[in-house]
Image (tube, rainbow, N blue to C red; front, side):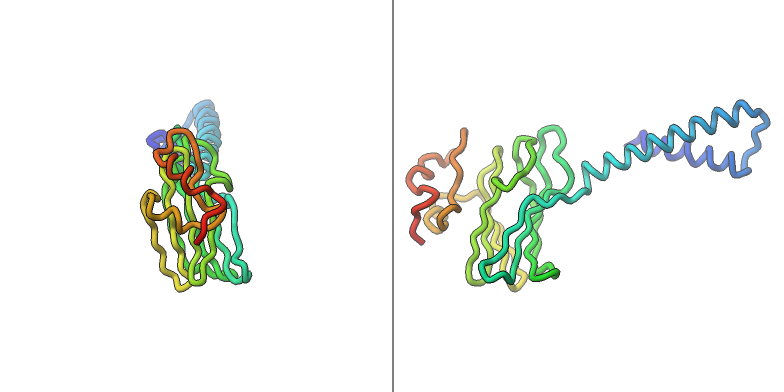
Length: 192
């Protein structure tokens, strides 16, 4: 970040020289400052493009629509994970074009790209239940109500498993501390 600030200061100094605020008598020095200014401008633009892609770019991973077609929940990734870190993600509940509820959270997926396999959606009468899973974290549940409320839970435990509908159970993966729980409550076949 300090390099970007230094490059910006140099660029401002070069612009002031060419605007006539500072007089340079040597044409060679002017040409050298012009070349340095052009290179700094190019490097600054490239740095800003990378910063946008790594920190602010919003990518829609997947979306699900309610059975009646009135509501839609969107799963988005913000930026890119750095050095196997957690991804910044968010869920948006929409009715038409209007956002009703939104929640942001980190998703630890071992630095891998987030994909539609990282979430399971269950539509209820008054809310949507979303279970988020990552390779380096326990599964987490978020309830987004149609009146705008949002509730998030910590890691899903034994008491929560029987409440899930078909397709909304924990995924069995290496290192998951709930493997025996998954065997007892298979993904499909739970009664609600």
